[in-house]
Image 1 (cartoon, one colour):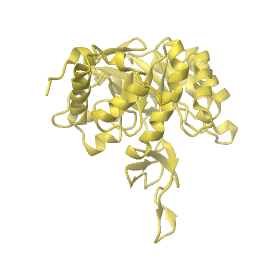
Image 2 (spheres, one colour; image 1 turned 135 degrees about the horizontal axis):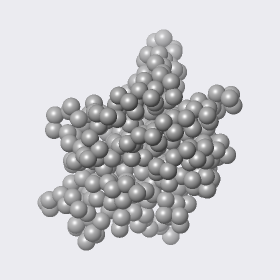
Image 3 (cartoon, one colour; image 1 turned 180 degrees about the horizontal axis):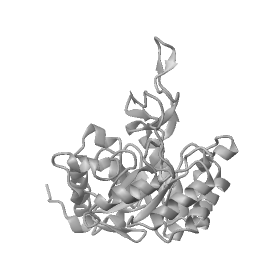
Length: 314
């Protein structure tokens, strides 16, 4: 077995230098400090950390239960519990070591104005990039998620683009008709990259009470169960992105090096680890080793050479 070659794992992602292609996903590792307390974990094994979803004002989140395990995955409906953007910038970012890894803010909102203001707050901080969570419900339009409407998605990106020069990563929802069309509109609006995909909406039912297990009735499904869908969506979005040199952060059910390689071959320049951390908090080290070994065995000098190398069947 060959050793991990850190140099071939490093890459550039919309202006950020990533020491490995692995990104810890928003909502899974708090605000960047919590996961460092896990024995054996090191920020040297990852390229970036996406911070927990942040809104303008503090939010308490949804009622219990917020999480439910499902076959090959989990449902969550945390409800964007967070202390508010000003507190995150003032009290959390100052405690992070930006020499160890890159940190990406996750901007969420209920209105176009809230997205804009939270982005403005993070623009005036040390954060390396901003991820826009457009899967939030638009309270002014009957609660329809911003990300399920291509026009509204583009409007959110355009509004955020006006108030920051930091890299903007738009997190695309799979709960829409044409994800590629949505990506085109977001590129025109100023998105620098995409995170593909967000969770799928799902439900779990307690047959004794005949009620949903999740207090919010429905939640986001993540984990291995959604991997085939995520791979297809990455492939579809890559067809739009490749002509514009727009990178993709592929995510959805990645828990092994083989999973990560599939996403890279489909078109992802970096891969996100989320639910997989709950199964194995130290999985990143093994994933990096598998990717490194694969690249060396196939005489590839970088992850970039493998991105989008999928050959479709005739």
